[in-house]
Length: 406
Image (cartoon, rainbow, N blue to C red; front, top):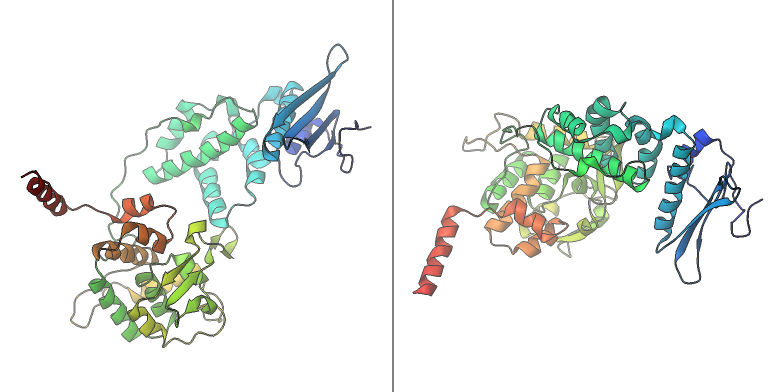
């Protein structure tokens, strides 16, 4: 029987081996008020507004109940305390003498905690774990993974970027292990050496245009060859609005207000773990209204905009991100030239957005306003990405200081 302090609406009987999975906190196995083997548990709210985790972990050698309680400020904190005690109990019962391999921890504990992440984020975690982390460290016990083992794994990565991503993903896994009491510290949080940064192709992600004069030339060239087509729509939304690729493909006709000279960014269509998925924009601040410039309005007034997506595939539905990438590659193919014979810069959705941001800075747009326009989390992102102080500008500032000093 459950004690009077427990909610007996949900009771679970589980073997000791199963209780490791119970402790992982997924919807299926989340510890709830009830009984787990010879362990009873509850998380309840007190009249004071605090939450209490109350776990009885069986009997001590003298026959008394081994009861643990902890008052917490939030329900989530109380649930973490409950899970930590369950893990401690299983370690004491001698499941592999309290040792668990990294691969087992990832499968049983890490992934169930990540069920609400966006598909693109899950895809990144899965890539790092499957290609970098688990092949090198998956068979090791969690407590045996130290700085030496992590450093070897990082130096085996082909690029600095892949090594950085792998360390950040491993740090997320280890942070959960620390929270659950499996390891005392997160070794992935220490300072590490990384492979030397390679020198990327400057046009690998497309050419960044630096003025609206250059942007206007590209827009006019595309307008003459692909008027009203999905290719033109992607170029206009990228070069004249500065939208992210997912925002371009997620835009619906109802989000376009030509009379009001604005478009609304409310959703994004991005690559998910199981294919393209429609969801919220990248960050909460990416939900925004973007003003419509005169040139963009003149072009968009000629578009046919029935209900549904602005950029459509051959089937009339929302265009697949990979299809969109291929369509732009054909537009900005090698050998493409303007009417005067000069080469057309190779553009991608990535470089179009950043060409817009760079050109805004060149035109004198205030950084704080541009940050809101671009949907950045904060103005620091805008400063780091687009504000490049030229040495000539610094000399001009030095002259201003000299004049002030006399």
